[in-house]
Length: 298
Image 1 (cartoon, rainbow, N blue to C red):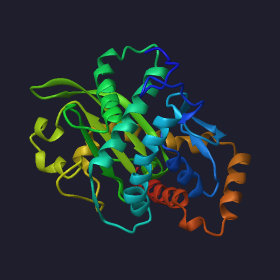
Image 2 (cartoon, helix red, strand yellow; image 1 turned 90 degrees about the vertical axis):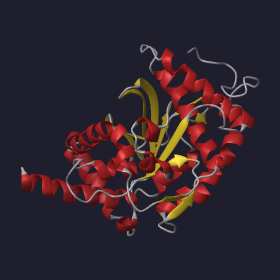
Image 3 (tube, rainbow, N blue to C red; image 1 turned 120 degrees about the vertical axis):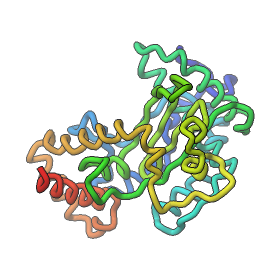
Image 4 (cartoon, one colour; image 1 turned 180 degrees about the vertical axis):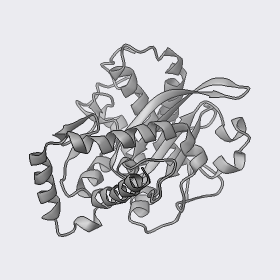
């Protein structure tokens, strides 16, 4: 997919210089709730960053339109969930539009940064998402969107130490295929922001796996309420291997940081009087406990 000199959504106006692939509110809260007030990429632990993925994608008008969906999601689900103020949420049309806009931008980004990889089979997903965002309607596009609100992992099992830092301090995503029984290969996409996982599928995952009840509460939109009380392990199954690999990578990255740099990081964290209330500190301590259990069981 060639880089477009016009807005990737409306195709009419030139894009602004840098529009965020992941909403700005996510990055803002990620930095605010970290004693270091910085961002790091898992594959480049020595470097620090002040911003996330950005590209010249959207014109100011389309940026504003998508921002209205972002604001709604942030106010009605994201902030209430991470501040522990609510336990149930309504997954309505606006949340579906926000989710579609997130997948739409991310898939475009994947095309641009993976030019050597043939992703032509994913193009139908991209154009369906574009139609959803352009027409403000997710209906009749044949796509299925799911959401999972993430919770701390306190016991060893499916996930290794490092998983809490991945859940609550990491932004990640991937376009991938999945082989379903009797159906064959279908394309999927996931985007994970701190605390929340979004999955996009060509097919109804519940029907494909004969587990409709397991997935019905996590589909966007749904007819009921989304409970924030537990991880949906059936939904997480599709990206569990990726999550395990990233958790291991995050844990191993601590050894790649020099002793001098690590001492400076520890000093800065300890100088924050509110460190114990920050998500980054809590995630690190949860993973430290998992690592201790892992070492004791080894």
